[in-house]
Each structure stands twice: as C-alpha cells, then as structure tokens.
Image (cartoon, rainbow, N blue to C red; front, side, top):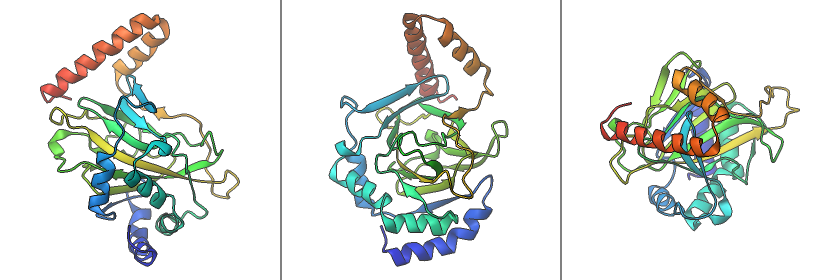
Length: 269
C-alpha cells in the first residue's frame, strides 16, 4: 500500500467523483496494492476442507466466506492489517467524507469471498448493524484477487439504483482492483452466475467500516441483509424451504446446484 501522503492525495483527487457517482457514492481504483502481495493472498486462501468456512446456498446466493483472520496466511494477515490501519482509515474518511470510521478487526462476515462456477449473489442491501461491535455499517471495501479474469466469465459487481432498476455500473472483478462504496441503501450484487473455466473461482477480499450509532449522520441500523425479490423462483424456493422437511430441502439444494452448473456449462444465465 502506498505511503499515507500518497493515499491522502489520491483521496483528495477522487473525493468529488466519489460523492457524485451514480447510482450511489463509490469509486473503482486499480493497482493500489503490491501485485505480488495480492497474488500471495490468493494463493494462501484456506482450503475448503479447513474449519471456518461459511457456505451460503440459497435461492438468493451461492458463495463461500472465510472470516477468521487468526487462520489467515502471512500475506493475508498483512493485507488485513493494512485495511485496518490508521493510514487506510484516514484515506477512507478523506475519500468518503465520513468522519470517525471504525474498522472491524474481526472481519465479521468479511475476509475471503469465494464464488465457484455457477455461483452468484443476488442484488441486495447489506446488513447495517455489526452484531459484535454494535456499530453502524457505512463503507464497504472489496479487493479482487482474480488473475486475468475475463468479462465473459461473469461475476461482475453490479451497482443498482433500486431493487428493480437494473445495473447502472458493472465492474469486472480483476486482480488488484478495489471498489469502495457507501452503505446502507447501496443496492449491489453479482447476480449473473460465474461461468469461468473449471477450476477457476471468483475471489475477493473484503473489509467493512462503521461509525457509532450516536453519530449525527448515522443511518437507520437494519440488522439483516435485504435481498431483491424480483425473480419469481426466489419467492417460491423461500416458501418451499419453510414448508419442506430438512431431507427435502437438502435434495432441492442439490438439484439447484446441478441446475446452476448445467447453465454455467452452457454459458447461460
């Protein structure tokens, strides 16, 4: 990461465009981190057999999250330390215009994101209250770890103005590309399933930043994630999950995974 003087100069250069960006304040910055370091972060990603992964497999999303920094490799620990550092937080405050930002050293629901072939994340609005720190979420930082990622492989981050509007901005998740955006009420996701070649997955390292709920500009702190309901099958699956016994639900998940994989194999969706 650049020295603090360079970070603050970059923040000053991009703060106006950040504030004026549509559909909500955001910025895309390439090349901020040392490339070799990010390659090591990607290579250090814990194996899926290691305890600590959380898999989200619903009609709204299919992704894997590893948010336990105590089990990170040395390069991932360094990246985590940089994202939690005073220098980087000062950069974010200058960039976003939000004072008194607080990082989350526990990386609650952050850290490594892995989305395999046919995986996706429907458009949603993030949870706004950190359940461990009792702080209000204000800023997301996403650092992509995908070497030579092609746009045709899907997985683009989409920024929407509402749940029903369609994408205003699409960001290809290429290596050493960082996206910063303000929350809450930021409608975003990557609803187009990943269609990368077998063995490739969409990798991202994320960190979230908060302010006190007593801050003068603190928004309403919703606890949960709010997903788009625009697809009919999402509603049907949600109802079915409530009514069906666990064995049936597990069977439906397996069928859904196979369906996604078939669509990805044929380049659909």
